Length: 251
Ligand SMILES: [Zn+2]
Image (cartoon, rainbow, N blue to C red):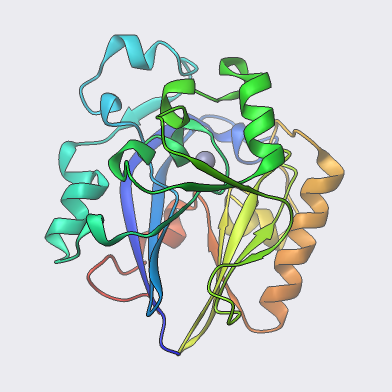
């Protein structure tokens, strides 16, 4: 089974450094990633980046996101343009998986309007309960798309090549995606692991939904790394500098 994995950096965010690593001063400008996995039985979008309203410095939209977050995103960096530039067709996407429903991961769900959203049940419940103070902007994920809510692991194509893996802690229903390609396994960590340093040093961010769960998820990722998987850190600017962008395949 040949599975192709593509990465897209869909703009950047500047946030307090301590939001990524407790104890750090100043700010950090980080990439906002999304991925496409192409399998013979379907194409999977993993995370969708920022809301198109963020492009236009839409004060109404931005007013909903914490003021310490600064957006850097152009129309050209949104998924439809990125797909087109890469010679890919966003209308061929059959599965949309969100790691979680924060504004920088589900903001572009509306760009694949006919595709049901695969998310952990606990995540959707939490997003609806917790709302804006916790980084959830309703208009990002309440798009009218149907949800396929899951609990635990989900093997998307039944052959073990693309598997949703719960990695809670950042949020209660966070999940990562394991992707087996010809050149090895990749784990799209999402915000279960922001930076390489998060994993190397088990260094947590300032804000934790559940510290124990976060550490357990990092240990799960370390275990996969030790067994040869490449961990794709969710927001590591140094790591992402060298990540090949679609149409170049990552795996
Ligand atoms: Zn994030």
